[in-house]
Length: 305
Image (cartoon, rainbow, N blue to C red; front, top):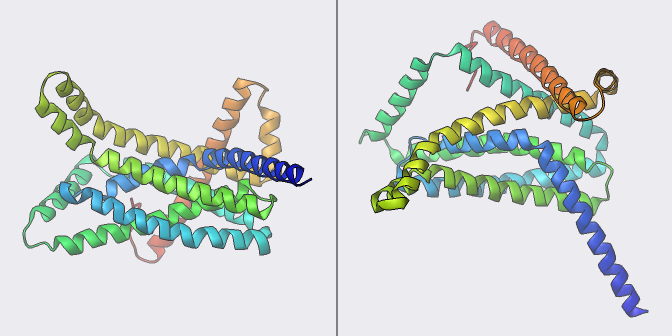
């Protein structure tokens, strides 16, 4: 009897872990847009920091990210336990913020000239090279800004993940949210550390000569292109993921789009395109509203990015 009970317990644990793994994968897919943007933004946050301080800065931001998750995960579980009615509205807010941020990035790209961006970057590099600049204070500001950005993106990820596990047993919800929180923090900041040191690794390999020099030059050349790819992929995923959340949160709209697309792979692609179009439309509307509000308040109408 005891042996049977033990095997039953092990079977229950295995089933639970299997469910958690499946739900974690679903949550990871739903948060793909945020993760791509998270990578690009955090890698950009260390721009202007001295090479010898890049990894310490990334580690400091990673610690802040763990603290953010320690606040957000219990808060999400509390909402799920006591105020589950808020899950769908929070998901819609998260989806709206995603498409707004994506459209704001596009607006920045088309409204700001490359000369302006190059000038700002030049001023940043010049300021860091200036001996009069307090680099300790500058570094602390960088870290604080990155942690604030991480809190916003982490909140989106946790809310989206909470929507995936809605209605599941509390233990499953807790395990999935903790797994997602740990995985994205370790994964994102591990990759950020790798990205910011790619050029240094490339230079080191180039100095070795031979075949390693070829790999080194490839790393140095590919580092800025990787950053651009992450930024573009993150922006596209924002519209796909954010638009999908908004569509599925409004049953009438979801059924209407489902009726328009055929079955099969073509239907899946068209449905994704429909989600992206909805996301871009909502994002453009929110950007326009924010611009009007800023103008009424006498502030700048230019995007913040």
